[in-house]
Length: 427
Image (cartoon, rainbow, N blue to C red; front, top):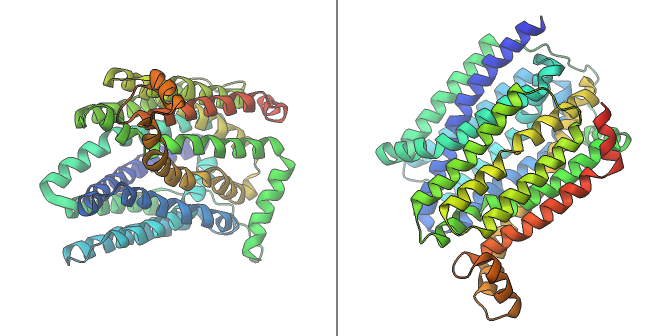
């Protein structure tokens, strides 16, 4: 029975990969279109911001709803609403009324649907995948996600060049139809739906936090991961691309190589996690992996002066990420009762991702208005930092990588030594 369910999950995984590739191509094409219209980096940052903020807010209320309703239905409806958003963008585009504000609104709607879809998918995975294969499946998910990271910019840029945004949107909608039909007709999820009458929308939040209050180790993991996410989003979300372009005299090929290496590192990590045995010390593995990512990724990115150094740093930064996700998932699926997984996963998403919008906006602000001007000054500290990171355009952003490398490594190692977190190694 477990083997049959696992095969069903592989089919679901494949179809969701196709849909994810279509969605990622649309996201990249929208960035190209929006930047072409406004020539503003902040307008691009706000696209991510408008997606993350509703996601975090609605994640708080999604958990109880997810536990009380069929996960398959939630996934189908959520994906359908997101597809309607893409269809709306297409309609505005062909009628000549598309604006960046329409994209902001659609991204906000997609953020709301993701708040329901992702926890529902996580619970469904726990029912379709045997517990001893959870970490391997997490590696498989990391592999597919990073394959998408590598290929979606090239595919989107090619399609955008030959057919414009409308062609990319049509392909995205076709990928949705494929994934929707696979889930609707071929995937049966062994549902465990609670029959109690719905209460206050805050009840699910209270129950999720009540569980975390008793399981302090899991709560500490979520809080520390929120801080780690903050440090990573300060740089990689907004700063990596402009830093590479600034320090390579606008070399788009160099930027493409570095971004591809980010995906290659994630692919390699995903392959390793998907075939290796589950770690015996899962909590330690989470933070050692994070520490290595900050130490060899961010610091090398700060100190590098050419595409070769940045490429090695990109691989070093992304290769440990699948180990973080796999070991965290292995702990959560073992510790959280299936009856409340929706509530706890939703609260987890709200906690861990709440810092991402702040990091996105703050990163752009610090780069443009604080550290880049500071590194152009004659300040003694700027001169001293310049001896480490170099001078000129992009040096302020390099300093940001230097700071996140040190701070991220410190937080990761301190978390690794936390006694409550280390107790989770015993599960």
